[in-house]
Length: 283
Length: 283
Image (cartoon, rainbow over all chains, first blue to last red; front, side):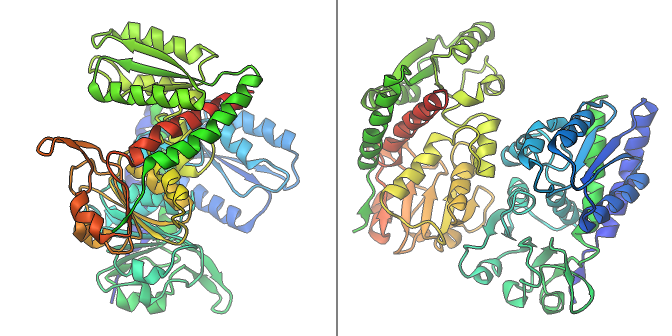
């Protein structure tokens, strides 16, 4: 039986620490505040927003919700975007993506104040991830993977890590974060030949391809720790599931994250950590 | 016998094309101009400066040399740095590093105009490398590796590449550039265990550890293309040499770059390419 790396335990431990930090900021007159910025009524966005609201309450972070209609004009979007960027009481902004087609995501990214970029979408944050310097914040999901590994005492330095996926949201940044902690990292992607042959050699496997059940036992080895970043609705089974085919992977590895209840449960706590850090920088 | 991947051929081909581009910019009244910015009389800096001057003449790029004494004050450095940053006739700046200890390299990096950063040292350029967007320029040596691979028609997409080294000057950026062209890339470093076992699996091996003769035949396989970025003075042999022990590597691989005369010969042409691109952006 593989060890189950549950996210809740990690999130709870983080949240306890963060609530303390938020409390001492409040004593100094600063209320760490996150603006959730949503356009339209996409189900994923609403689910993540809800998770953020719940988590924020536990961590002592205040939420300001912005919700614009799905057919909002660029002009109206820009006005609201400018307002939250300039409001000094807002320390971090979470912009739900993708935006509806009439809106310019690149412009939003470019005009976001780097110091409010708590989910690592600006060039400034991504440069920080690449160069291992503190300019902005890493994408929350990538950092959630690291928090999870740290919490469960999984050794990273000197280990081999394979990441399936190379997106800017997770694959590339998590590869960099692992390398900064001295893992030897390979990112597999759609053009990689014979992925299982590569991932089988890894001590740590990060599944971030966004393909349901694309990772099976042949990708693994018995000493491997598998971190599943994927989240999909399995129509047939009627439940959420991951990139890994859990039933086939779990018996063959040392440890694995469940989906749901793994990385996803940690992400919103990382978001709160960033908001509190952003608020503390201004003190 | 391995195929010898000489840099001169690549540089000459690039230079011919670049001279044409520079000529048509001049017709529009723009003379592509590079400022070489040197502090002190370090031998490496002078050698690279000399190479840049020679290459610039061939490519139709004008050079403005700045040379400050090794004991220059921060104040005097800043004044000159500001001047070249603000001079609209200068399209690119090559700052020789490291700077003497009394000067703040981070400040120079931070205050450099990103659009003049033709050697990829600013956060803006490095963010571009990481995200695969055109914000600034890649470090010249990393891009020289790519030019060399392209010139000799070496397939990158779908191939495995191993990079020994993870510096911001070469290891990390060249890994990213290879991945953007669909190679599957692993960066080995000082904390990687059993490096030869990893590099032996690679179709393309980039030697960028900065350790003379640290790469031997056991790192290779007979189908491998070896690109040697290292450059060292071999005291015993009385000549320049690379990270690879050439005599031991060459008989066992498909192709290899010589040192000197490999990547190093291409770097200054990439620099001119960037200066001309920077000049063209303003037209």
